[in-house]
Image 1 (cartoon, rainbow, N blue to C red):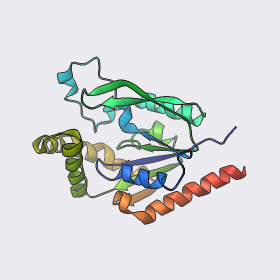
Image 2 (image 1 turned 135 degrees about the vertical axis):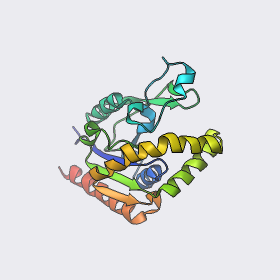
Image 3 (image 1 turned 90 degrees about the vertical axis):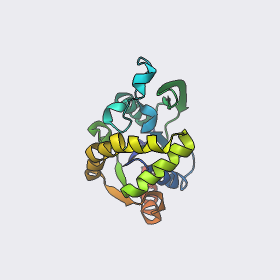
Length: 211
């Protein structure tokens, strides 16, 4: 039986560049080596709530995530079992009926704003990364994403940032930096840090192969 997969947690605030870091690491390896599990896919199902109530969900709060299911799936992947990753539909603010069937791989990158907030997830990680980017850059990136990709208005994005995103970042996300093994400033543009991460992964995979 193959060795247990390596689990890497990549955390950081909204718009910090977590996805860019993850993508840059993945580009160094074949598609058969790394599996990315996005915490965003594991928002709680809200189909039992009226649509108006779903609109009030704070997606930057720990209670918004179904970490029980996420942890169950990580355990399955660590045991080399495939899982059906849920899909979240932001248009209806609940989980979609669609799922994505994923196979276990040698490296699992668990990416999300609060993956270092739950001790149960942290205990499953071999490497813990925090992407640390200035607040002004993060809000600009969020504005660009939400207006362009999600059809949001400028006022709605700013209001959400001030009432939910910023307070949650300060209360829940920023404190998790203390649990990180590696802190990467400026996200995907920090090529030195990404080179170090890629080298570390290569070393772990090489040692597993030698066993």
